[in-house]
Image (cartoon, rainbow, N blue to C red; front, side):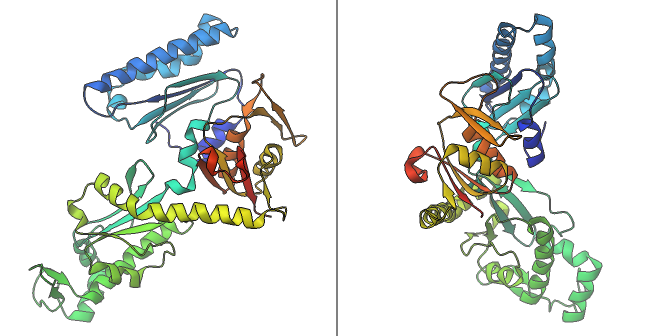
Amino acid sequence: MNTLSRDELKTLVRKQKGPCISIFMPTHRAGAETQQNPIRLRNLLRKAEDRLIASGLRTQEAEALLAPAQEIFGNGLFWRSQKNGLAMFLSSDVFRCYRLPLDFKELLVVTDRFHIKPLLPMLSSDERFYVLALSQNQIRLLQGTRQNISEVDMEGVPKSLAEALQSDVFGKQLRSHTGASVGGGDRSAMFHGQGTGTEVPKKDNILRYFHQIDKGLYELLRDKQEPLVLAGVDYLFPIYREANSYPHLLDEGVTGNPEGLSAEKLHSQARAIVQPYFQKAQEDAVALYKQSAGTGLTSSDIKEVAQAAYHGKVGSLFVAVGFQQWGIFDPDSNEVHLHEETKPGDEDLLDFAAIQTFLNGGIVYAVGPEKVPDNAPMAALFRY
């Protein structure tokens, strides 16, 4: 099973040898309906074989091309570990399979390029955020999207205050500041939380612990721009903010002890917090687009935007969901040719521009047609 990364996308958008098969299908995660998953895929592969043969391949050639996908039918672990949707890409040189938190409609595309457009929601910057769940007994970092959340391994960071107290460096600091012996003796390192009836460490000890966490987060998030939401009891929030160095920490957090909350519950509560943040970011991008109109820094011309996206010039791209513009971009001549109907070698130029923008570090907003500036299928705000 592959992870959908920039390097993986570079592989998928690269020109392939011979026909390319792109398969998208919804998958059930639990219950008796999971039995439909391999049946649905088998039916799609049969249709793919028919299309390959109709395009001129011999039966043996079509079967060989689809063979890697056929091998997963007997893999029980694979079918027990599904998400919302399955995306599969096959060519003579490539076999990629992704379990993704996207509700795909069933789709089969057989052409000379992989069809990437259904993956656009995974590329939109407004899909990603982090949740840092703080408690004395457990620290969790989770990465969320609009539809899913998963835990991130915080290597080198103590997973609990107890673990931090056992470390040599932290333990020495603790004893030098409080005179306490870890695991017993002097209790001066502790104080009682208001109304909890439980003992919690003094603020300065929690602060040193949070500095350790912040140091570890810096290594994980130093190149990120996604918002970070805290989850924890109220009294921990101001202490962590004192230690925090991540510039995208949001003011509002999920209150309450997160130890009793599942990842799905944290996802639901954090999404409610980050949604206005994402909405404002998109509105600000639209406002900047309108403000920059007439300066040469904006365009809704498909040819110009496709060229600019390829060369890394696009900072923000608005793409209309459900709209296709078929054509060809020739990187050697830097020319774009638009076609009213699909021709051999064509690709969806909106798809192309979105992928190139993402690969070059730009921001992609996959939105309804009515939300694209200039009432166009695609609009771009250039970096320069």
